[in-house]
Each structure stands twice: as C-alpha cells, then as structure tokens.
Amino acid sequence: MALDYRKAAQGVLDNIGGASNVASAAHCATRLRLVINDNSKVNKEAIENVDGVKGCFEAAGQLQVIFGTGTVNKVFEEFISISGVEAGTKESAKEAAAQKQNPFFRAIKTLGDVFVPIIPAIVASGLLTGILGGLSNAIPGLSGTPAYTIINMFASAALGMLPILIAISAAKKFGGNPFLAAVIGYIMVNPSLVNGWSKLVADESGLMVPNPDIVTWLEVGPLKVQNVGYQGHVIPVIIAILFMSVLEKWLHKHVPEIIDLFVTPLVTVLCTGLLTIFIIGPVFSGIEEVILSAANALIQLPFGIGGLLIGFFYAFTVVAGFHHMYNMIEAQMVSQNPPANIWMPVATAANVAQGAAAMAVAFKTKNEKTKSVALPASLSAFLGITEPAIFGVNVRYRKPFIAGCIGGAIGGMVASWFGIKATAYGITGLFGYLITTGFWVQYTIAMLVAFAVAFAVSFITFKDPETAVQPAAPAQPVAPAEKAAVKKVFAPAKGTAIKSAEIADPTFAAEALGKGLAIIPTEGRIVAPFDGTVEMVFDTKHAIALTSDDGVELLIHVGIDTVNLKGSGYTAHCANGDKVKKGQLLLEFNIATIKEAGYETTTPIVVTNTDDFGDIKVLKTGAVEEGQEVLEIC
Image (cartoon, rainbow, N blue to C red; front, top):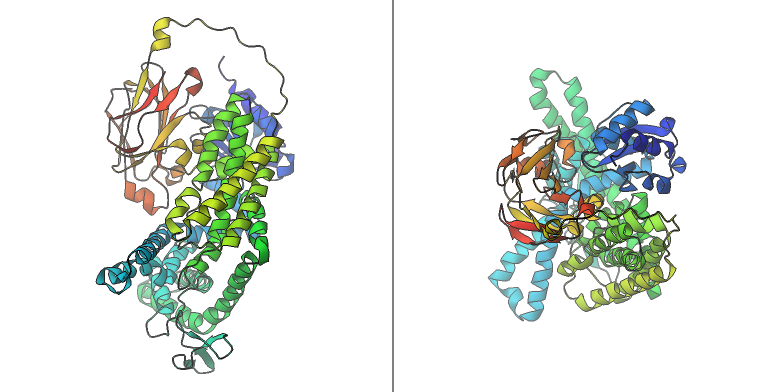
C-alpha cells in the first residue's frame, strides 16, 4: 500500500511537540532536518514507529528523520502544509541549529571547523614520522643518510608550519582573507624568532627554563616580549586570525574603495602582527600550556585512572557534540617535538567499545531491521566513524551505550598503562595502526580489552523491546523465473569502491536507506548503472534516483552534505522521466569544487527498495572502472 505522506508528516509533527516547537525545517535527499526548540518534547521512539520512517537521530543540533529518496520531499511538503512552519534549506537549518546552541558549544564547533580541514596534512606528517621511526629501528645507521634527511624533511613540514595551516583554515571559518592569514601564521614562526621547540633547557634542578644563550627580548616602546616563535602552539593562532578577520572586515566597510586595496591589507597585517607578537601570543600561549598540562596530567593519572575516566565519558561528549575540542588538544600534542599524542589511543578504545556494543546487539536481536542497522554500524565504529553505532543503535537502546562506555573505560585504562603514543590525530580504530608505530602490540591489547568488555556487557544486558506481534501478510506467489532472476548494478563512476560502513555519514553507513556501496570518484562523471528510467534529478543536481527495467530502485548521491553547494560544480545531462541506457552520461561534476568547499566526494550507491529482494551482494571493492559490475541482486 502506498505511503500516506500527510499521515506520516502528521505523525512526526505530533511527536515533536507540535509546530510551536519547530525552530527550522528543511530536508535533504533522504531525511527531514528539524531544529527543535525544546528537545524534551520529542518522542524518538514514537517517531521511529511512524509509517515510512526508516530511522531517527540527533546530530549537529538537528533532529534528522530518515524517509528516503523520493519520499522525504513529499513528506516535507505535507509537513510544511499542516504545520505552517516556513520551509528552509539544509544550510539554513544548520545555521539555526548552531544559533540555538549556547556559546560554549558554538565555540567547540568552531574549533572543529578549524581543525578538521587540516587533518589530511597532519595525518600525512604523522604517517611519515611513524614510518621513519619504524625504519630507523629496523635499519641501524639510517638516521645519518641523505634518504633519512629527505623523508624527515617531508615528515616535519606540516607540523613545523602548523600555525600557517591553522591560520588559513581559521580565516576561511571567520571570513578573513586566507592569504593575509598565512602571512600572520608565518610571522609567528618566522626564522628571525627563536624556534619554539629549542627555547627551553634544563636547569640544575631539572626544570625546563628559557635558554639564556638564545632567548633575548624584543622591545617596542613600553612593550617587551621574548623573541620566541610559536611552533607547537595553536590557540594563539586562532585568536590572532579571529582579530585579523574582524579588523579586515571593518576596514573594508570604512576605508574608501579607491584606497581599500592598499590600506586594508597594510593596516590589517601591521596591527594584527604587532598585537599577536606582544599581547595575543604571550597571553594565549600561557593559557594553552595550562590546558595541555591539564590534559597530560589527567590522562597520566596513576593506575590508568585518567584513561579510565576519559574512556568512559568520551562517547558522552560525542553525543553532546563537543568532542571537536579534542582536536585542539591532540593538535597541541602532535605539534610537540617529538609528536606524542597520548589522547588518541584512549579515544580509540572508546570508539571500538561503542562498535562492540552495537555488534552485540546485532548478534542478539531478533529484529531483522535492527540487525541490518547494527552490524554495519559496528564495523564503521572499528574504522573510527562512531555516529552510526552511537546514534543509530546504542543511544536508542541505552544499555548498549552504557556498555560501550564501560568497555571504553577499561580499554582506555589499559592504553594509559601502556603509555601508547600516536604521531598524528584524526585517525582512530583499525587505521590507528598507521600512526602508532612502536606500540602495535599494546594498541592491539587495548582495543581487544575494550571490545571484549563492551561486547560482553551489551550482550548480557540487551533485550529486544517488546512489540506487538503483527499478523504475517499472506505470501505472494512468485514465478520460478522471478525467484532465480539475478539483477546487476554496474559502476556509475570510475574510482575506489568502499563498503557502506566506511561512509562518513551515519545514515548511509548504517544502510538505513538500503544496502549498497560507495565509490570515491577519480573522474567527475556519473553514467547510468543499468537500462532504466530517471525517477528524479534533485534540484541541486547532487543526487539522482533511477529505476532499472527489472525493478531495482537506486539512489546515486554524489558527495557527502553536497546539497549545501546548491548545484555549484554540477551539470545534469538527464531529466525526470528520461529513459536511459547503461553507460549513458547522466551527470558531470567538478571534484576540485567539491573538495575546495570542504566536502567529501564519496558517492553512495544505494538500493532503496532493498526489502523487495532476498540478497544484495557487493561484488567489488577497491579500484573500479566505469561500467564494471559492483552489485548483484537476487
């Protein structure tokens, strides 16, 4: 029976506290995105039981209700009609959600927005540092060779210039000129200043004090400061660029256009540079050192107590949305010489434990829908992406979430005992082996302990919620030829195929919309994966829904959160209702435009009518060519 869109919309509205409780409403290709005034009025369990709802979770200050492609837009129209709430965009919903948060949470989100874009550079440096360290241990004498010097130069580049990277990223966040920001970042690590890593020496008592042989003073009038650079610092850079951005925008408004090109950059750099060197740098580097000392002291409490506490509460901070502040702490840790990120192994224990708790649910539940969500969500957590497991399974059933916290606590305690160190941040879980060179055995033990404890507690305590038993629908006769029919989906793009669990989006990773896979494209084109019909080309051109001639309904979603691009960089070569042949060009997109805007190009390919079939197999992962078989459906 066809879904009653109005009834579905009414069901959602009734269980969120009514129209007066909605601050903003929008939708993307797969889900309603609602910003709620009072979350205590929301009944998530009731929403999930509304006909047509495939899942419900909170993330980034939004209540996200999953309906699926082709359905969500119709439900949204009815929702707007019956509620009287003004329709907004996904981007406006995110802005409304951010404004609803208190200043502390907005500040934490800002830190995440600054540090996340530079993770690839830090990961590259961390991996090279780890590889170099491992090779040096395996090959005595390597450290004195030209090869070592060259690779070490590559490995230290991002960390040595970290203030410049942070400055550019912060300028993009605060709306400043990234090139002026790069100048300010370079001022803070200018070779004319004493390198921040070499400014300290041990005195007679063993305490680290400024080296009197190299640290002198800079004086300008009444201002006086040590001539030390800011290698290894992050907070002073962010504050400096915040000031720079505010000043620059003010100057653009007040300086006459005829001289703006000359006056604004000059005054911006001069004022920001002087303020940074004499006030912002000294003040906030001191604050930063206190924060780093506190984090180190906490995690190194005796008997692993610090790791136990962090491991237990880590998932709570993910739910609350302020885990992004750890990026700052970890960035400080890896920017030391040598890099020593002792936070990451504890975070890994917490993430693995949440994955294990979800896996226990998958093994124990008798609900096929829950099982189909929990298993891929658990695998995703082992790779460092925990949102599907936390929001899709564990928080929903509560006891698995607590089980994950307990497992994270014990695993975190073990990680602290061993003193495991990483050479980068931004990677956890199984991929963490790449940045924990020298601690692989200890890292493995910490993960196994976290997994075992969380799985056991979750398996013992979890029980399927009691639900009314519905009479089974009479079986429909199926022709023998239909039973045996095997349907194929061919790769619509060239690139690297990955499993759904590896997608950095909780809805796609948990396969809430259906089973499938994703392709990370190397060319900006999408072709028809079979002979069929184009059901919908989304207005923003980032997603296409098709139906094959043999009944497979498919969603191709180019990029993650790329609806925010509003069609920029996309060109559609098909329209709703078009008949298409396998290999026919459907869409072109600019990979560089997507990446420069800060979005992933990962393209989920989802069989949205999964329930109509017995089995869907992923035939290929890794490198795939356009037109190669990737899914088998029967």
